[in-house]
Length: 241
Image (cartoon, rainbow, N blue to C red; front, side):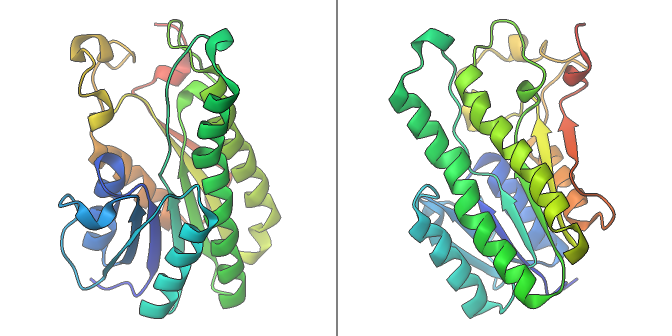
């Protein structure tokens, strides 16, 4: 199936990002995938409908190259998936100013750089569009022992911006949503004890990257959903268990 639509995907070289890229390719989308070393990954399947752009999304020039590549090769931008992000935990009093700058540069500024360019292009096309960003249930539902306060300032910022952008451009048909995964089986958790990770939701277990990719695809194509946070966390956001 060829949709003729083009999606931009950040943080696409491995884990959730690569699963998202493959899912959209399977669905018939043109895919422009970016990360620092996306040209070196073998996790994304080869396709004539795939363009890879290496770069740090914290650098505004990367966003410009991604958009230029999409328009030069495919002519339109119909969807954006902001998957790139960094996350690390510390006691609140131990986070440094440099920690915040590092988190904000990738998570917040990276989101702003590419989302602004994508929205401008969608408005120019007048064909609506979709933006889906990856956050976490920890934004609104902290877990004791997972000390992520400053990291959550940036992920929470993405959720706040997404809801506001959703309302701002609703009349233009540009939908803006977020997917909030719980624990996912990715390289991020390769050194963490699986038995412990499985206990971090009432539906004990760990999500696959494909389950997150499926949620992203659903929101991208859900024509009447905007301003929504879709938790994919086995019910962890519901409270104590």
